[in-house]
Length: 328
Image (cartoon, rainbow, N blue to C red; front, side, top):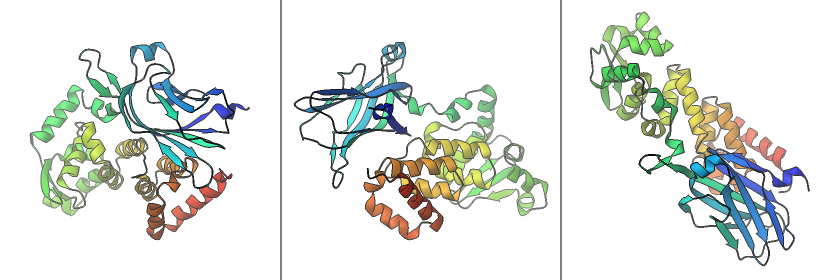
């Protein structure tokens, strides 16, 4: 048996372990794999029935900060039409040992199969209050706005302190400051440095953004964005970042969009990655669809996607399928 028999493949919040046929009375534990702040193991035990376990690697960090996990776990047979068994969704379960989550499988299985774990959330208990806190809610964008200087900039925007330009969104207007916009965006700086209509009218029209998304965009520029708002408006922020040449915001959106790829959004993310030239996001989407076999779970949506997708994307998908195709 080679080392690859114990390797778990991971992408975003998804982990998959591919297993050959297990003999009776067999126990096998995977190599550790990283999701969130913890190293994890999967284990299978076959006696009269097959049991699957998921648990964090024992360490001082795990003992002091045991993960409280929400996840969906599936068992996918590679034979025939890829029969799938799904465990009921697990919500906020604390995992410390190999006995904390055990899934007994009553259905007999033969041949190769895949254990598929999709982590929906990982939480820890706050040291003082004991309140559960998601590790994925700790956004860099929110942390950056805690400094005193950024709080002052945020007040300039929220309290309209000496604003000197109006931003017209599709359904409302917001006052802002030329100097701040020009310092953050070379596109805005060019607008204010030449005899453009924005300079004459003291207004900028951003008609392709709602007032909520535009407010979020300005909050980012002023260092006062909240992570929840950032997550809600990521796609609109990505468009604005590309349009106004805010490379840091574009990269923040790029990184964030890779963190929660699932069957509901993977095709939209793939289209977005192609449109805005986001290579890492495109690679993650391709890997999720092909390497992790999720293309089988969204056949109808994928067929509809093929009707309008760019030819280059379609070509890349099929090249990825051909490269990965090994009969499994």
